Figure: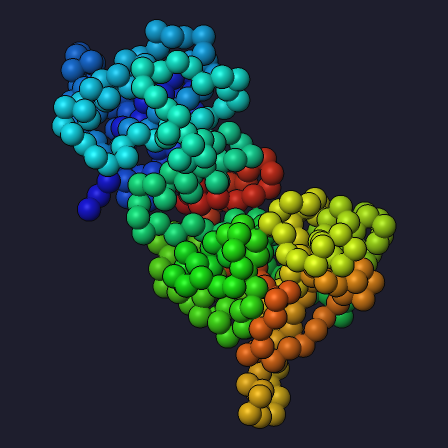
Length: 373
């Protein structure tokens, strides 16, 4: 059943609201906003009618509302509250969204405390945009699958690749390792570990292939094609981020604790993804936290304890040593059916040549990519 949403916002913020509206509609959500008002319409009657007709009311909270207690946003919220009470609506219809830096939540004609706490106060200003969008879509669409964060890697020639120079095509790579929460959302099974924001571990290379198969099979995003593991060359290229030393940042092992969870600072456990510094291209946790499966494999003799396939792992881990395990070029071959508490993965996908990529200020990519005109 198609969901319908009413957008209530301050006109000064129409740009960001247009962006939100486009993404909702890309996910087959019907959106009504006051831009739909025709010339000569009795605006309050039309708005009241559409508030009643929609399943959800997205309240866009912005800093200018603190100075405009007479804004139509307050009137629309009051109208929605009255309508839902009269109709005895039980669904959690109100979705408050903070869209810029608000010093204090305005005094709205409804208690927002429950809603704000319940959804962790959705944030849509730049550095929280993707997380906020996912929370909104999860609220509205029961079957919505959170897509891993991806960064576009440009089609340049790698510098300092450990074996040979490889001319590679542009591709997208996960900003973080895949998390426990993302694994659970796709596979509908809970792996070992508790915090959904920590990297998933204890997964074999073959189980990862099944995860990717499900992700591709259920993918409705036309801007994405072929979720997969990165090749070793792609992984190294992204990890180096234009550098040529042992690590993907300017400096040596003395700076590693700023970028990686490894044996010296991890406390013997994994940590939430993205807590330390990223490399120059915005990738987190490539030198530590968990080492990662990549796509490269070789065939070996099959035995009762060996699948006959070995795959490469890259990157350091929470129990790794700086020089021995965390260097960019470090490579380990493991049988594809083994699982370890320090081994996870991040995903890659092909970049479509016929698309115009939209990159956020932090170099992250999101699914608002559009076909060139």
